[in-house]
Length: 481
Image 1: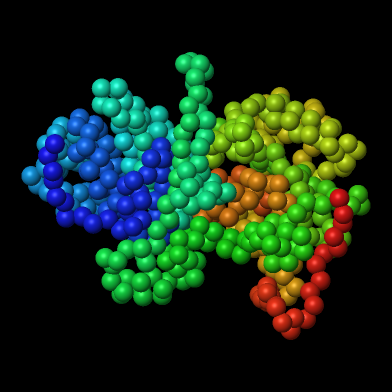
Image 2: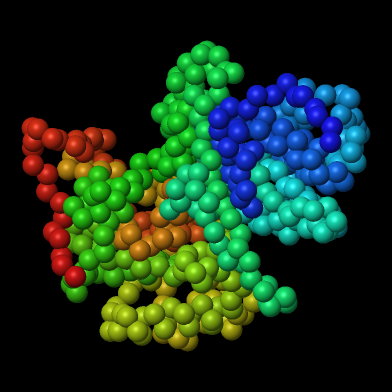
């Protein structure tokens, strides 16, 4: 065995990253945690230990790849141990292993790797990618028994960007940092199942002693949302987030003060009911069920989301992937729910204007197909900017900490996707519609149908008052289940 000394002393968190046995691993959360360095050194050391393997290291664009991972590799890998080919963007090591540096801007780029055998997959800034790219690259993971390894994935990322929602759902939500979480993966062809593990290792700038204090001061001067994301690794607030005012505070699910997510309660019969709808085929469709109290406050109490579900968790398994159901099948799902749980309830339906398109004849018109099953909709107002502003208006808290829109905690896909909506970089007044915006859209249609005035003045309220010095606050009436 050859002993090689490297000029690399990992930080405590980087060492945890290198020691991890997880099949899928996310490292980072904040800027300055040494993510790119950790990815390159992990790929390099692992490739040295396993002759003949092919590791693929991805960034979204080539300039990002060149300025981070490639630069880090050229700087950190001793020339006696390998040579970088600038034309092929490969680093070939002396033992036959190869580090392939690649970029992947979209799903079409991902398809270029259809015939590739990836032994180790590394992705830097994972939230810059959509889940369909991640899932496709995972299908390229394979190996031969002679190499003596099993394929694995190592990723790093800050919060934010287009993939924030699915990355947070996969690695962060409901999962304790550092702990290995196990999923059971089944193969119908092999008739076998095996365990697959996933782990999140958070790191902040304070975990990296190699950075100067100037860098910390620089991060602390950022706007609040960006500061929380980059300095603290906060996955609940991030740069580019549209609805920064959205609050999910379990401590106030019962009193409904200072939170938009609340505990379910029995809806009074006299409240008006609404059904909002956004059509989707290859992307998810979304049905939202709402009630409006006597003040016009909206409560989202149920939803039907057209995306594959994990049978173990009963939660959405793949972000922004539809079920490819025909309109009649979607209508049947709605009809089944309403016949079972909402018998004799009258709904005012507001829907995506696209379902009223009769360009392929009335028989192919989605709204007509729904009407055949007794499900009726009015055409929603598609004004994008005005609709977004109506949502801002409803999310605003009054002086008592009460908004004009609530969401029951059982509406998991609203809670998952709505806070992850980001701005369109080319049209900063609007949201990025390439993300998972289907629940946002049907909610927007309803808010445009029931518009409210702009709050006269932004208000703040005191969340915690241990000395009981503030005026008493009154929550909406608490109807018992």
